[in-house]
Image 1 (cartoon, rainbow, N blue to C red):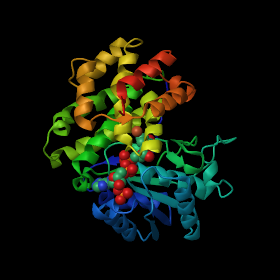
Image 2 (image 1 turned 135 degrees about the vertical axis):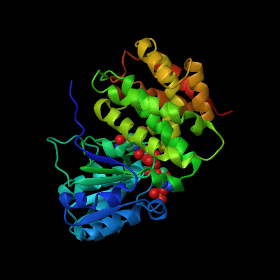
Image 3 (image 1 turned 90 degrees about the vertical axis):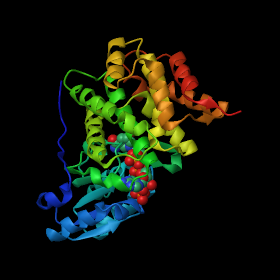
Length: 369
Ligand code: NAP
Ligand code: FE
């Protein structure tokens, strides 16, 4: 058994302001990567630029990261970093900005690698410039994982790149959620839930790495009624939701994700479904299939969430994210690709048959009339 999360993680109110000196240890010139609007609107960008000013660290802002970031965007950001002679990269935002920052940091240190080759397995591990992560959604946990999910539109592929890029520093502050719409909080919390469930229902799950999802699922269960209610999220819960998301990231840092994540990428790429719901649609049916192999683990997950059975789990997810319909042709195409996706199938806690894959798709996606 092994435990390895080398990221220095602070989770507290005002943590960017409280730890400006930690930026000094990371580098001398920074490229800050954000999406178009949210980081400027929720105060996270001001906090980071204030911290860099306080430490006399010059920075440049690249605010063009789109949802599900593309190889073209990370190529452009890496060039901006090179032109500015940055020696580290700060990702502020949801998983998209943080994943893009990781990929740009890798390209910055490896000018001979083109962004369109990021998904190719390297002959040897490549080094990368240090990354600082400041999350503003409560879902991906990218601040605590070595994973970057990047989309290459030229080959119609959304997938994690094979390079392991743990941020050097993560500054996690729940207050950035205050500007988020309820749907964004719910969608990203469903992603965090999926990370923990997929980490337990996983061949790599062991006594050591289980500490994270088992504790995190209990926290998620405590947020459940607020997520399900019609009211806005109470500010008291922001920190707990962020903590849960980071713990969920630490969970998959050890095990990786399994079928629901593998299945989600086609849905996002072909139908534009946001990441959290795209994963969440498949979660209950995957859990049902895994009950054949690890019934005790499924019981444990349900009890930590305060649910009686899989039907309750299905109903809860439908209340949170609704249901989704695709054409029969699309569903058959997605299922055919998943039946040969060994990188995800081999992580399930038992042998997933082609019939199991069909069952998950049939149970999870409706067919458009
Ligand atoms: P996201 O794609 O980063 O952001 C979604 C939207 O939310 C964007 O429009 C963004 O606006 C906005 N937003 C972000 N923070 C906000 C805030 N505090 N208030 C208001 N709006 C805010 O969403 P995400 O779900 O966090 O990340 C999804 C990506 O992460 C996917 O590509 C997924 O595959 C990947 N992922 C990575 C990992 C990992 O371990 N690395 C794990 C799971 C998923 P702006 O564009 O203006 O910023
Ligand atoms: Fe995810």
